[in-house]
Length: 377
Image 1: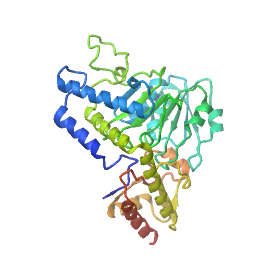
Image 2 (image 1 turned 180 degrees about the vertical axis):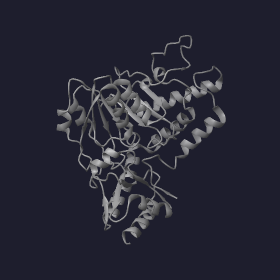
Image 3 (image 1 turned 30 degrees about the vertical axis):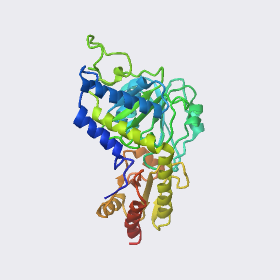
Image 4 (image 1 turned 30 degrees about the horizontal axis):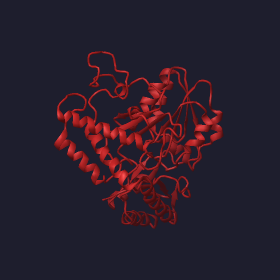
């Protein structure tokens, strides 16, 4: 099979990920922070090392402010449900994933929170003047999708930071951490939310959130942390305050392997490979009659996420033919209905093609055989 669905989860994983995961489940296996025996201590060391490496990757100087979660969705829920109070105002964009829009819908209906959605262009461009004009005295958060999972557009963080002033900035970086350089301190990012199974080459079931100093959301869960067990109150120290219950240590071990792989290859080399794949896809797909490439095909800074439609065929039909031809793609709305309204592809959605670092030219060629065959029908 040719795998072109890396925006959902990266595959295959590097050998470093596999070996680190295998070592944990076969030779370590302890519960970190819960016991004093060697296997528990080794598990805690793995968690610590992964936290240190990941914080360094995103420019976080205080690794204890890097919180592990179940996924990017839980990270975004912690930011929104934990920081927004009744009567607050939140500003977001029309390219957001439902991991942002559904918590905001819940807050609007249950806490009277007002939500302003700044419409982006169909190329993924955010109107910074409209963003600046949306700020109010009651604005509690600005939430922005750093890299679109539908069309790959990447938002300019420095310009956004300037436009919103001192209002806390929450960045949905599920598509960009591990692919695009991020520095939470230099860029003024107050809350960075992301998953660890995409460009970080970890496995599913792990996410993270970085909280800038002064940002203290209410925890989503309460319970055992392995620390201060003599008290029934939730610990207030980080990261324990937000990490109740047994952590996904196998997932954290796999992440440590993925981070080691990124260190070996280098972010710039990963980005260079992904850009090359996107250029070829854009060039080949744009040359076909009946095929429309959505977003901004000329944007060389975009992520390797290409969404297409084809005149006369539904996205589900194209996806079916791709599967028959041994090619894995994503069809439909990609959990981002607002983004599809923005680019004019709602409710049908698109065919999303997302190559990754391990995608080959032969993989792209196989996809093109299928698409070209459909375009000629």
